[in-house]
Structures are given as C-alpha cells and as structure tokens.
Picture (cartoon, rainbow, N blue to C red):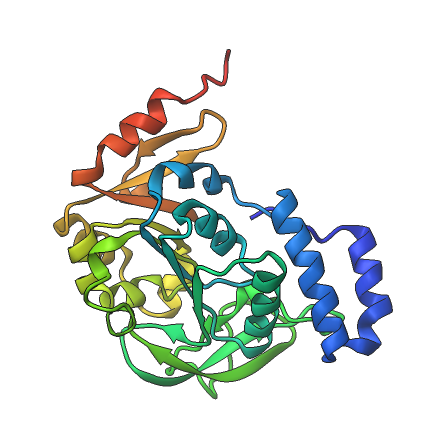
Length: 288
C-alpha cells in the first residue's frame, strides 16, 4: 500500500497531538484520509484490477476496511443497486472510517464494528502505536490466544501497542442467505487471520465463486499456526487458482506456493477464468 505519511503530515500530527482523542482530531484525520483516497494518493496496485472483478449491482466485501480505501472504490463499482459490506473491529479506526464514508458520500455500504474469524464471540486485538502515540490501524491484528500473557505476545518488534477487546463473527452468519450468490469480490487484509476467516465463509464462497484478494504474510501465518500449503489446498479443492498481479505489465500470472512472499494475491474461480484473459489481453508490455 502506498502511504501518505509525508514530512508535512508528520509535522501536522505533532502539532495536533494535544487534540488526539477528541472529536476535532477525529474529523481532521477523516477529512485528510478522505481527500487522499478520493485523489488517489492513498492506493494499492491491485485497485487497477477492481473494474474487471466487481460487476455493477453485485455485492463486494471489504474485510479489514481500515479507513475505507477499498470500500470507496468498491462502492463506486457496484453502484446504487449493489452493496458493500465492510468490517473494521478497532473502535477508533471504525469511528474514523464512519466519518470518511460520510465525507465521501458513500451510502451503499454497511459497515460493522466487528472482526471476522472462524468463531463467534469476543477476542483481543493488538494495534501498534507510532512514536507519537498514534494508532497504526492498518497493522491491527487478532491476538493468538496462545500468546496472551506470554513474553512475546506481538507478532513483531513494535515497541508500543494498545489492546482492544472486540466482537468477532463469521462471514456466513453476517451475509444473508439470499445475498450470498451475489457476492462478486472479497478482500481480506487482517494481518494473518485471512484463512481463518475463509473457514467461516465457505457457504458464501461456494454459493458465489467470488474472486478473493488476500494479503498473505507467511510470518503472520506461522503466528496463528496456519499451514499455508493446507490453506491453499482448500482453495484449490474449491476450484480456485492463485495469481500474482504484476504492476509493471498490468497482468495476472499464475504462481506456485513456493513463490509466495508478503504481498497481495488474487484467487479466481475456474468458472471466471475469462476475467484473467480480459485483464491480460489489455496488459502493457513493459518494454514498449
């Protein structure tokens, strides 16, 4: 993800630090994020693919919505007859997200202050803190119950973190049965919990054959004791193929399990293989 943390913004954060935690600061942050999302300063390379993956009037799901980057683009693509479901468990991030969506005039989205996994209940989420004490919302993650109260509960070497207790649900319980077949796209960016979420979304995936955009970080999967090979095999059994998006040529390339590094990956059902042909037929030769 291309961030917008410029030197000027760092100075602004320092100046506004005394207002941190107030409604005024929350609105200033939301206005800044909404501006960067709308202008394209805040983006990921895979956003280029969305017009090919998300038909108008379909349903798209944004799991780990953060400040609404994907929600904004998905909302525009599905249109007034479509719908977006967004999930963001961290209360402070959720409140900012709500304001961003209001500023961007997005009305065809249902956002839920919940995390998703393969169980229903409550769980602890850990959020790293920047040096100035600001939350790094994009790095929020479900705490592995085995690691709570252990010497190293964090997945990384963040010096400071904050813990929140949040509600957790499974996707198949949230999406109404009469809407499951309309789901065209599911984005999962949950810092290692992605395949646990998919375990709770099998009804929706089977009914819809939705395209999946999944951030995979092998180190984070180890934290949750998740086997990457076994998880990919589950998707292969469901008739999904694994692709990597090459931004330089704007094309999708089939890759093997051994080639996976920390990045976003696209899983496309074999019944939708024409999507790959359409994208690659319009790819740009980087040498031209």
